[in-house]
Length: 151
Image 1 (cartoon, rainbow, N blue to C red):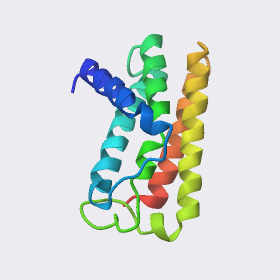
Image 2 (cartoon, one colour):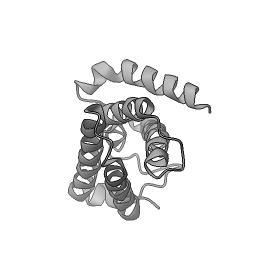
Image 3 (tube, rainbow, N blue to C red):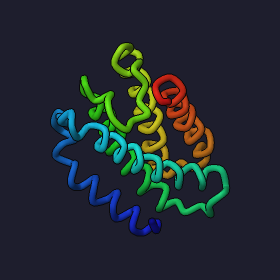
């Protein structure tokens, strides 16, 4: 998928979900796995671009970082609505601990969302000097959750 198509998809997703972001998101059990995997895929692509620029693997483009961080922040809570009881069956890498240690999972999700929020706040204000460390914090929070709750 090209960067332009990914950006359009991300912006469309954000606009389509803007109303849902202000209300409780309810995901049917039968759709939960696809919902959360799609949301995580989008987040991974957005963060991959930001982190690539932060690490110097991709040429820095501040406008792209701002746009990607804003969309990432807007959708950061979405995948965590995709874990209703009973959605542990099927083609998923989700560990049973997501449901058996729900409070721990919610805390990990909150920490990831907080790290993403800090990254977005900084780049929205044009503060790129800490991009590498802020991106590292997001990466650490994602890895922590993956290590604990993903097979």
